[in-house]
Length: 172
Image (cartoon, rainbow, N blue to C red; front, side, top):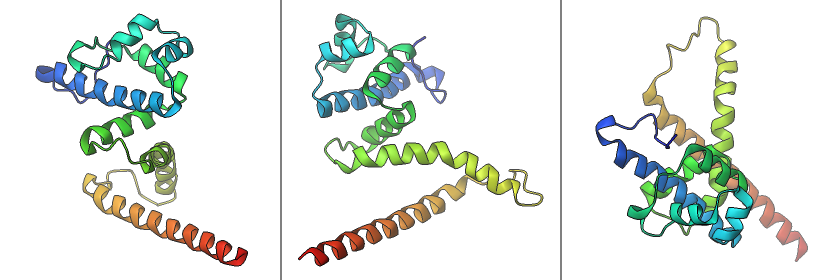
């Protein structure tokens, strides 16, 4: 099975697949560079042949063969990256184009866990509300919710920095 996102337009599926694959491969190549892994190292860790892996990771995207879903999972497992983390980071890299920001390496595991936990917690919260059946949810709430999460995260980061500064002041 070749990787294809559910949102791909069938009339443009080759381009859609290429974008999804490019995002995942950007994450894989970034992780390889960060961990200083060669193609040979990753081939051994993933169980994918060195020649096949070299072709999939070819520098020229036009020369890359399609990546299969099992191969993707094998690569992500070998690099200890959750598929949601890889997808989120791949999408961000594709849209933001920022490979060099080290904050991304800390942000995406946090977001991955957040997105994994959020549905369960929202369902539990809705279960506590009499008469809530899910029809109340609106897609347009995503912007305000994202803003609220970003504000809360900034608040928590400021608290950490204040505590760190207070400890530093005590030492000197």
